[in-house]
Image (cartoon, rainbow, N blue to C red; front, side, top):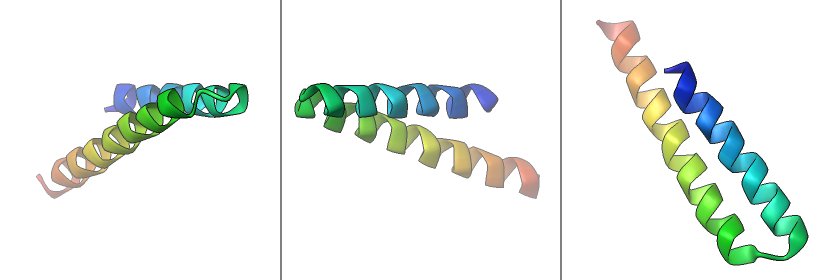
Length: 51
């Protein structure tokens, strides 16, 4: 599960760099991917702690 957080951080950094450089479409897409990776991580973490 740590890989999901690592990927989310990479996509957040990519989104920030794209936003600064003016590529707002890529920034939005990267933020969307990072958001879903974090959501999946949280769901898997909750399932792991329950089981």
